[in-house]
Image 1 (cartoon, one colour):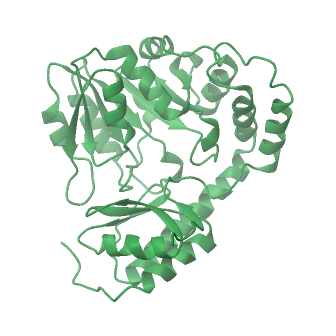
Image 2: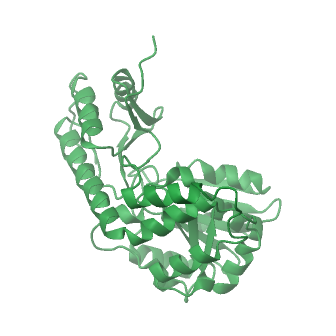
Length: 339
């Protein structure tokens, strides 16, 4: 008999529903569902630009960050061109490449779960049009530091657009974080992706944005679907931007739970490296397949990559305790730490 899913920890969703003022704004917008939204999301563009302290001509809004990524590929890629990215990573990157007729070029991660920047640079060729970085990385949670990112950008040929996916940046803490907005002037071939799906908890409403040079943003905007951002989503984003202090407290809670999970999993014998997203990465050669089975048996839905690892979304405390209980019930698997 199938075990019912009690805790959804597979998709890196927020465990929290929209804040009350955000929910109220959504309800008011639903009452106007017979009216079209803006032809292009100019209102959101202005508000996001003010939030990011950049000019509005540096902002493009789309259907989630993945929608903006597709618009970029549609703008710069021609059939037969190449799109490079580290692998494993977000499953959408090779799908988007295929949708635009591009050749996907996956480059293996380093053994410790970082994107191999030197290997990515070596993979760039004459037909490469886009190289994707994901920082914090999905699924491992590793970070491309400020120094490493600056050095990488200086070495990327100008005919290659760098797509920097920062979907999880609000969960990153500590020193070495890049100020990506400050890099836009120096690197007109850089587009930084952000989203309202993760930290803002609006995954179902599909709103993301990109930051880039005015010339690149203009090219990406040409691929924008008219009426593409609905009025309910617009209202939710506007209300969320007004409630950032409350949302920041939620993010802080998720970060604290992430660190608690990491400490307690380590105490159970798992070799958990520091991560900077809203998830914890359990990697082989720890017994990840057995761990995935134990979690499924406990009604915990996770993202399992057989033979590679488990990405555990950080849920609320009840869900996280269920994870710890399930994995504590496994046979002890302590080994010497990996080098």
